[in-house]
Image (cartoon, rainbow, N blue to C red; front, side, top):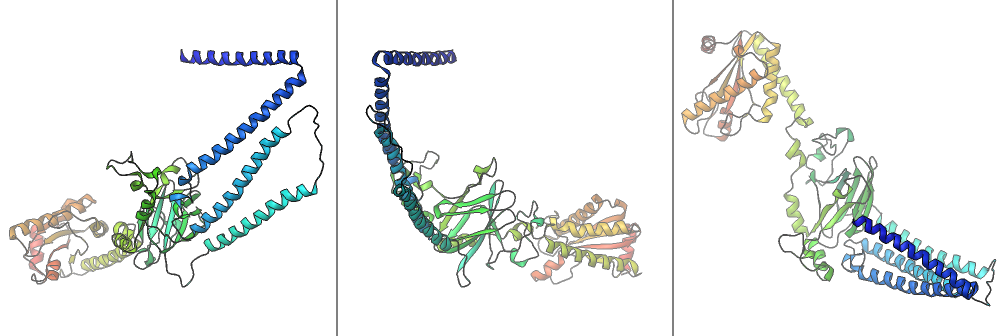
Length: 507
């Protein structure tokens, strides 16, 4: 029903317009065409003058009304050293273009009124005028020269790299769909080498873990910097074109896959100072409707890192928070950050350094195990499993134990004519019965892991000794650590209790 009413209203409006046109035609016939045309042109000219006044006043008033949201004005003054140059350049450009805007619009509408069709007035055709040509080419050229020269001077100053003697910190920003990954150097102050071929689910940036400079690098999502500290930002991207944009600091640089860029700037305001400046303006006063703690708008505003390229459907989600702190507060924050390598990579299969150690351990284990079965004596048949460990006070194997346990599985699969006795030991701390039980459980846990890896149960046995067989002094921590161990006893043929007891007795 509503749609029908809308269509009827539109049809009625069109009918009214048609009728008005017919009335105008009748008026022309009654009063004369020239008189009516002159009247219409005069009305149009006056209307254009009125529109000009309303238009220019409205645009000027709206710009003034929203000035505190525009970069460079009110609370949006630059928060970096170089930003003052950019703001000055932009204000001069705005002054020139706004002056041209006012003059051209005034001329456009005023001339439309002044040179309207009037009886007794005839248009003059002007084919050429050197003075006019000089004016409208010379003045813009002179103004543009000053703007361009000033802009080049600012550009050369802003885009200069750090000097050899400069005190600065360097960080890295990597854009990808749809986020930013920030990388900070560790205590060595250096960012490590990267290679895109090393990128994986665990290695988000393709860091080369064989480069020692990478081992203390820190990965965070947001940007945190100290005030009054020169910062050099390496900028790159993993997939498509992004743009590293810090509006409050007048920093804007494309992030290009395969072509690193950079930007150098020095923050001059802490986040606290910036928010305090917002509090002086009514636009940022009043409760924030999105905050449940009853905070004012100025208290919840944040400096921002954004992507200024349309990089895909999730482009909006690349916004990140920028926090500027006093040096002491930054040092506290920085000290609380953890190396990505130490927290997520070290000791895992993604760690080439660790995997190299695992390879060396495997070679050493195989050498000792093969020597044991190659000699008739049983003296070398017991191998200490130094890299098989358990959660404290339990029989749960740690993740890092799998590497040496897999070495045992490989050895037993290659040598099908030997079996194994897994022997668990503890130190003498605590209750002896509990230690005995724990040693048996741990030996059994190793046996179960080997069985799950494909080794037949009749080739495996396990036994716990508690604290009965120490190999070091239990009065020292180092000694107790050595006594808490698991041993791999190689037995020729399928092991049995009598055979094991006999072999032990012959040792």
